[in-house]
Amino acid sequence: MKLYWVTTEDHDEDWFVIAESKRAAELFHELSEGYLDGVALAEEVSDIPDNLSFEEGWPDEALLIELGATLLNKEQPRVVLLNGKTYCEGALDGIINETERYGKPPLIQ
Image 1 (cartoon, rainbow, N blue to C red):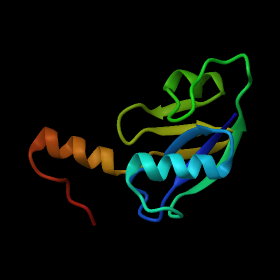
Image 2: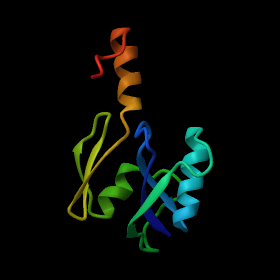
Image 3: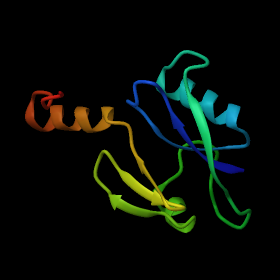
Image 4: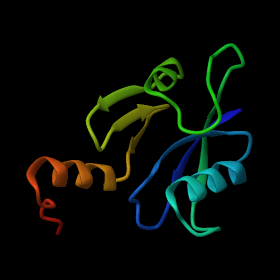
């Protein structure tokens, strides 16, 4: 199994996915987040050693840390440093949280 970084053009739901292949990661993301087929793009980040505990799909933060990640921001949007590259979670969850917290969406420019 491998860890992939999966994005879409709108970047609303970008996040890591555990899958057997690039295409499997893209399909999982599309189906889970309600995107049309062919919209997601997966990039291989790393192999996942067999001795680690994980399930196909979204990784938990513990697995990311076991793979060498540093969580630069644990709040949404989460920001992760892994293998010298910084990954930022899609912004939609953060907007939803702000809306729930303050009753209106934050200013988006």
